[in-house]
Image (cartoon, rainbow, N blue to C red; front, side):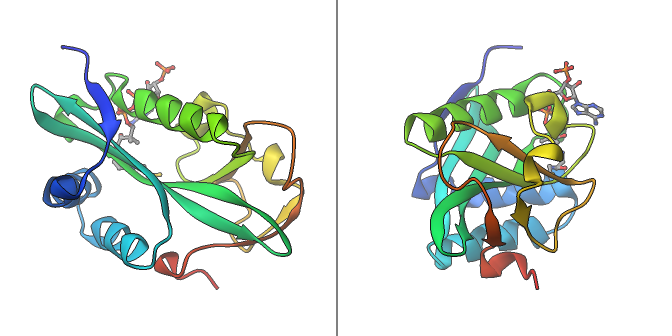
Amino acid sequence: MDKPVIRIAWQDDKPAIADLNTRAFGQEDEARIVTQLEKDGDVVLQLVAELDGRLVGHILFYAVGVRGKLGAVGLGPMSVDPWVQREGIGKQLIVQGLTMLRDNGVSVVFVLGHDWYYPKLGFSVEATEPFQTSLKGPHFFALRLRHGPPMSGELIFPAAFGIA
Ligand SMILES: CC(C)(COP(=O)(O)OP(=O)(O)OC[C@H]1O[C@@H](n2cnc3c(N)ncnc32)[C@H](O)[C@@H]1OP(=O)(O)O)[C@@H](O)C(=O)NCCC(=O)NCCS
C-alpha cells in the first residue's frame, strides 16, 4: 500500500467524510455528530488521510470545557475505510493530530472509545483520574501532551454528544 497523505480537511471533503464515517461505523450517528459539532462551532481540528486521491481516513478533535479553567480537547469521531483498516492509517491520523495540538499549546486530550485501541497510542484511564465527568470508566481515556493547565476539573462536552 502507498503511504497516505495526511492533511487538513476542507469544506469540499464534507460529503466524503460523511460517507466514510457511515461506512466505517455501519450507521449514520457519527456522521451526524460531525455535522452538529461543525454547526455548533465546537471543532478544533479535522484531518483526513488521502490515498491515490481517495479519502480513506478522518479524525476530528473538538473543544472540551473545563469548568473555571483553561479548556482541553476531545478526540472523535475517527474512522478508517474498512478496506484499509489495520494498515496504520488511524495511528498516523492520531499521531499527526496530537503533534499539531501539542505544538499549539494543548495540554490534555480525552477520548471515549475502544480499550483495544487508544491505550496503544498512549491514552490511559489513569490520566483521567483528576477530572470529573459521567463518562469516566474503563472506556474513557486521557493523554497528557504537556505539563500545564488544566490539571484537574469538571469536563463539559459539546452538546452534539448529548452527555448529561
Ligand atoms: C478504530 C479504527 C479507526 C482504527 O484504525 P486503523 O487504521 O484500522 O488502526 P491502525 O492500523 O492505526 O491500528 C493501530 C493499532 O491498533 C491495532 N488495531 C487496529 N484495529 C484493531 C482491531 N480491530 N482489533 C485489535 N487491534 C486493532 C493495530 O493492530 C495496531 O496495533 P500495533 O500498533 O500494535 O500494530 C478503525 O478500525 C475504524 O474506523 N473502525 C470503525 C469506526 C470506529 O470504531 N472508530 C473509533 C471510535 S472509538
